[in-house]
Amino acid sequence: MKTEITVKNLNKSFGRLKIIKDISFNVKRGEFVSVIGPSGCGKTTLLHLIHGFTERTEGKISVNGTICFVFQDHNLFPWMNVSENIAVGPLNQGKSITEVAKITRTILKEVGLSPFKNFYPNQISEGMKQRVGIARALANKPEILLMDEPFGSLDCLTKLRMQDLLMKLKKELNLTILLVTHDIDEALRLSDRVIVLSERPAKIIRIMERNEFNREKILRLLT
Amino acid sequence: MKNKSFLSFFVFLVLWQVLTMVFDVNKTLFPSPIRVFLSLFESKQIFIDMSVSLARLIAGALIGILAGILFGLITGEFAFANETFGQLANFFRFIPPLALVPLFIVWFGIGESPKVLLLAFTAFFPVWISTFNGVQNIEEKYRLVAKSLNIRKLFLIKEIIMKGSLPYILNGARLGISFAFSVLVAAEMLGAYFGIGYRLSFLQSVYKIDLMIGYIIILGIIGLVIDRFFLSISKKLTPWKNEN
Image (cartoon, rainbow over all chains, first blue to last red; front, side, top):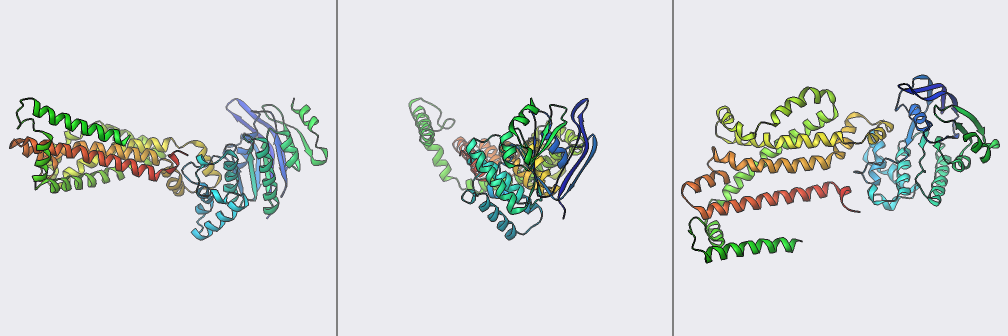
């Protein structure tokens, strides 16, 4: 099944406040696309629109494939341990206990959290929480991941490790990823393409292919 | 800390004993603790009365707690339900439970039903309010996660709303049973043949003050045990609230 995101002439306003102005782009199957822009420009709103958390004011969005969201603050359920947080999606899908246990075991191993399966979110580090957030999304077997600054609150070393993990999972599971970040280096390190947004209302200033990546160019576009 | 509380109980008993020995008090009206405990040991009714009272309390509180949880979940999750039934329930919340005793007696007689219903009525409201608050306090971000995982409504209510509200529900249940407990004795005074409340009323009529005080002490102990039991259950059911 073809997996892609198509956004055409997207506009979003909250009352009289225009957040997103006339954005059009697509994401092809298996691509890693980053969206970068100043704080508060509407990056998160863009992801929310694509997922369907909020309604667009104008324009078209089409998504071909199962989609899952990884939140900025992981948003783990505090009353569920690591294992239970990951199992929520498969349990909701009606899978048997045995199947759910197998899925959870496999994903815990993938993200390196097997020893922590019975720990609660308040007992693990921020980096671990973010890994659980990603694992919870992957347990749903999505084809597309929407990621809202998933590594924003992590220290440099943990961030690099998480980025490596993400690339590894992307390759193994053939994921399509749309990542929102304010970190230029992260965008350049991980992506096939980078979409640069302006200040609010967000418009696309430039879409850069990998062979055009240039840190200084992006900085100039953002300032 | 436990040692300090036992010490304070011990000091209280010693002081009480000393005061009854030192001062020339009427030993019938102001019996010593030794006299009180002896009267409890001599009593043949104490276990029957305790069992009957506890059975009424558990039956009534259980009905009230379950109804309160269900109503709290429905009014907390569905705005329509809260707008239509919530205000009606709020009206009944302000009726003192003991005001209903004469009416319940007329409707249901003086058997077990009116007592159990009264206890259920009393326990219901704190549980309803707490559960409602618990549901309303489920942060929007968890609902977004549920949406991102395409979680079905029933699954959402069971795994996220109910479990997320559990600390509130348990706190409400703890309050509910303590309110019901305070109403139990009064309800038993107005139409029963067994139970702590009935026995207190009877002992007053025969001037058996030492055993009356003994029964009151038993009430305090039962109340403490129930409260500790609920605290212990809450700790077990909400492990994420315990310290790291």
